[in-house]
Amino acid sequence: MLDSIFASNLPAGADAYLGYVDGAWADFQAEVAKFPHAHVLSMAVFPRDDAVGCDREPGDLALGDIAVWVKRQIARGVWRPVVYASVSGMDFCVQALRVAGITRPAVRLMTAHYGAGNHICGPATCNLVTVAADGTQWRDNAPGAGGTLVDESVLLDDFFGAQPAPVRTSAAPVTVPVEEPDMIIFSVDPGSVPAGFQAPGIFLLLTSDATLHHIADTAAVNSYKAAGLKEETFSYKEFLERGGVAVPLAP
Image (cartoon, rainbow, N blue to C red; front, side, top):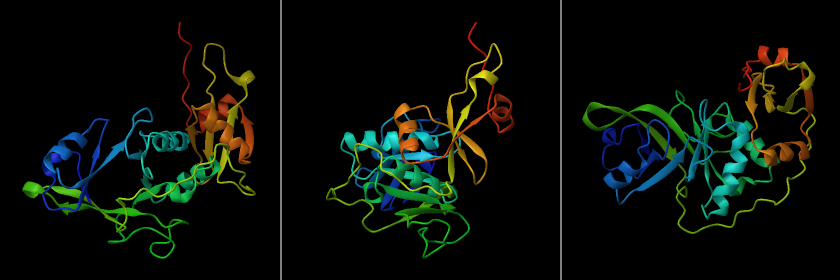
């Protein structure tokens, strides 16, 4: 599968292509028009938009958006929505889905992992994720049209399965034993928020890299709590020290 931010860079002859339905480089429709007989995987970078896949990268969907987005796609009939993330972030995506009651067979996982050759990430290959992916974007220098370079991914043979397979998501969050969680529910003490500034809301704190990820959806917050993730309250000062952004109240 090939992809590029410009449909014009993509050469004919690939078995599949990837295009974005939104964002600064929305090229999905152009790819569909250019390659009418090939699989074209639609991807969304904004949680409000629908597609077959979603992109979990900095500036795109947040970790707390993924489960809500996936459930919405399944509800509208998408077969096994695709979750795309860097190999270093995929395990966090898997855990976020799991605590929301979304089982592994309900989704396709696609990683980005350059520099390790043509492979699909998993415990038996690069061993950088705990579950095997369904596809991996393994290089960004595949030959494109007119001397350009494009991204290339290798996919499982059944990645574009024609027959819908039964998938399951639980109506209620599943209980997941969390003894040493990779994620902590991060709340800010309201009393520590200075006058004139908005309360930050609720975040996931990833213990691996100490980054904060805002959870905007109440259902997602409840899912994480029901799954047993540890909840901690921090001061507004520590929120800012961890990379949080101070937002003044509207005048």
